[in-house]
Amino acid sequence: MGFVVDGEEVDWGWILRHPSWDWAREEGRWDEFRRQERWFLDEYGFTDLLEEYGVEYVNVTEEVWSGRTADARAVREAVEERFPPGFREEFYGYVPQRLYDLRGATFISFGKETTS
Image 1 (cartoon, rainbow, N blue to C red):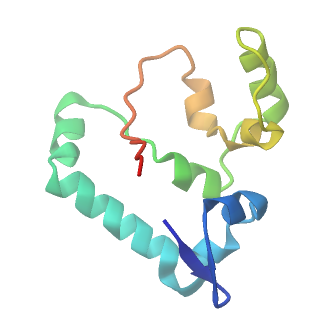
Image 2 (spheres, one colour):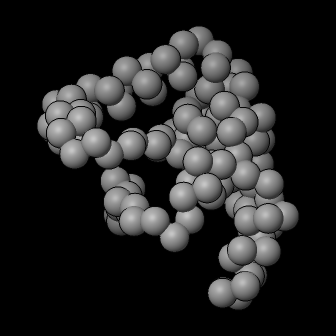
């Protein structure tokens, strides 16, 4: 997936190297991402399902872009108590505070890896 930022086409690698997320707020991109997410959740019945079971939905991207992240040092300590160190130090700073607070709870991820 690519994006155009200041007239230049960029990819997720560029985004990771420029973590201010200001580009997402420009030209209504963030609002468009939210609209698409709401459409997806509604269209495929997730909104009703989440409401029916009283399940909290947390959009990780929204939390990170809003600055609601856990302390990277605390995340690193928690991870490295059980696993080898992460391969990119900056990833420790991308854990939403809400998910960090719920660590140990059951999660369902809608993330999907695609291959070409």
